[in-house]
Amino acid sequence: MAESYQNDAPEQQRLLSEIDRAQSLVSSLPNDIEQHTRLATMGLMASFFAHECRNRLTPIIGYTKAASRDPKDLTLVRTALSRISDAACDLAQLSDLILGLSSKGPERTSVVDAWTGSCNKLADLIAETDTSISTQIDIDCVTSISRCALKHVFENLVRNAIEAGQERVHITMRVCSTRNNQHTRITITDDAGGLKAGMETKICEPFVSGKGSTGLGLALCRYLVTNAGGTLEFTSMPGVGTTASIMLPTVTDAMVTTPVEELTHLQD
Image (cartoon, rainbow, N blue to C red; front, top):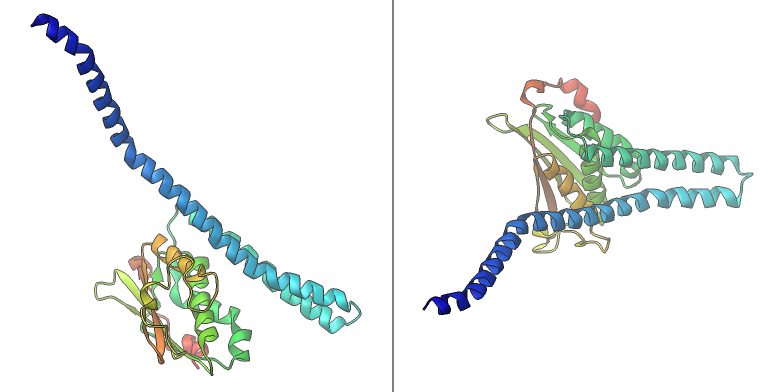
């Protein structure tokens, strides 16, 4: 009997070693998953910003070539330099956006300020397409997202609405606070024809697009909003229009009321 036990001892020791190794692998699994998720996120973010950089470099290259073709045309050269300067400023803002993602400090951004900046940035496009924009702002909430990030989200949503419309597009932006004043609700509604049925739940997924693009713009917008503790959702009626709904945490000790007269320049 003792001899049988001694013969089984090595096998028992081997089994115990296998169990220990299996337990070690299970214990390390959450860290491995976190590491792979982090790497996947980094790869996706690299795609996001490569996409955004390309969008901003394209006009720089185009206007540089245009000015080079006829350097004696001073009007053309001045226009090209102005456009190149605008695109270079966009690249600088994109850098600020990237740096802001790693910031650990609290963010405080006025919704009206970010919206005004976005509309000013897109003023030429809005005028060229005869787009009309109206605002319904109950209160100018201060939210915990960087100004650069919120402007980027607004600009993307407005640009998408304009590009989706076959005719003159009307966009309505609304801002209100939730009943407990803990969150700010922002909606941007257009009459640009709406999304295809079922697309509203997929439109923010990476590489999914309703217009043949890379499908990274709205994915980045959702990332920026969720990174600030908020949500970005879409509802749409095919043939009618789409509403983007943004919910962001409100900085309650910084809420301010913006007089109506200060908002008149935002009205249609």
